[in-house]
Length: 330
Image 1: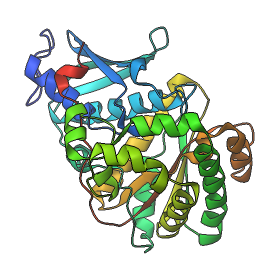
Image 2: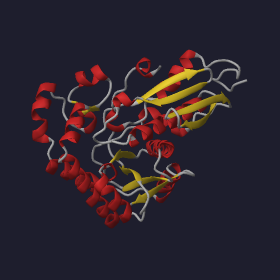
Image 3: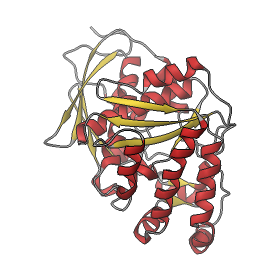
Image 4: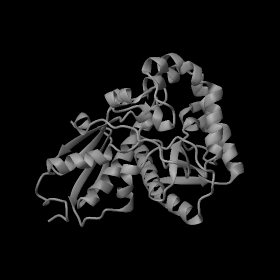
């Protein structure tokens, strides 16, 4: 028999429980908040599939971020399952590019990472610049490390400044790419009404920007979204962060990208449990011409750095929106 909240091994997953597990999975982050996932429930298993209709070919031409996103959702689902008396056994189905999660009864455990899921956010605002304790850094490193993923933590200012050079290089290249700028603009929600209508995308208020009518945002986008303005923001926010984390998978393939997503999500949930914010600064890994010298600077020649994340303490910002569970279940 299952633990509290579960169901007998020979029964299908109750519909409401399945929906609740999927809801927790969808609280994971995704590039541009595209929510590029689908969920199929069959018997006592959940399959997490990529929704390639929501991919971003300009910023993510090889779908790296898509599969990292599936890993983030998988990690959330495993913690939510355990909190409902279910053990999650995961495997990557290469033929479908999907994550299969088999669920079996186990004693219920609502971990601190599970409890952090609703509060986790990519906080794109300024941090206070204060260092973290050695114990906090140890917990973050432990959470972000697995047998197939390692996380490099940099907290010394000279090392962070070297990383900043690559962030600015990547950001400058992206800002000069019309396809990147056009794609990004399609995912920006300038006001609450637009964000509520779609349930996805980058709601400006979540980054500390004011609500403005969509027609003003569309017209003024090129005025306020400039290379200098974005680079200045990157510099300021890197310098008021407590540190930088770089996630590196053991191989550059879809299965390992899922593993990277799981490791990052554990890191993000552990950070949330400690009252620490984080946000992506992925420009050095998104721009191919910058990625190799960035890897060399890190001593990763021949490897692909997967994610760059800044972290530190700062204020909570409004949460990004999610689409209804019915919209992502198949």
